[in-house]
Length: 283
Image (tube, rainbow, N blue to C red):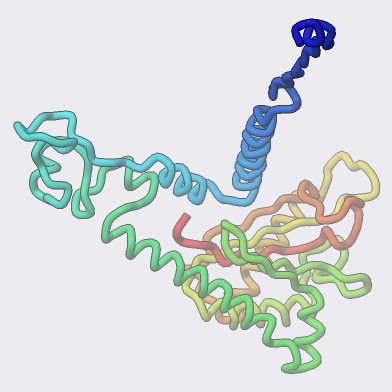
């Protein structure tokens, strides 16, 4: 038996162990997920910077960095507030730390306008914004009243901006607002001024008028576009007042000559226009 056992072959088994590292592991997935998250946050930041106003950006910044009234002066007790209660109106201001609804800090007023007075201001601002939209809708609703109203509305484009409600009145081919090269208004300009005076009476906001002109085809020693744009803006103001608008609401008239064209061609008649602006009072 021992001799038979000696002739049996010896078999050695080798196990190949594969380590789960490198591209076979999952570490790269975590790094990639972090990269995608960072890119999403970056694009969200870029979008917010482009789509918000300065006040909105201030509010967003204050949301992520709130002004928490933490006490720097110990009141003899334990906790973050030195023994004071967060709801104590009288104690927190005396400690010289933080602020409350009744005693807002300057930083809070600048960032988010906290407090009861700010709430009233925000409500007033919201109401005014709605009023501007109502004025815009009232102007557009004049379509269909008469052939004259329909003809006048062809010259009008409206938009609500941070400055207020802008009613842009512009020339159409063959139907100018003023006699060419002068500040003499045409019949359609007088009709439009009457419409605007009636619609602007729906609000109490101050009014501004901006004049714009197209460029001259030749270079002149005395370019008339500056004086012409200012004169037309002044005539627009006079037409509003003569049509019934309170003259005390007129805040300014400005002439921008041909510096802000609406079309790529600076000599296009579309650049001959007046902007009647129903100004906001909360800016």
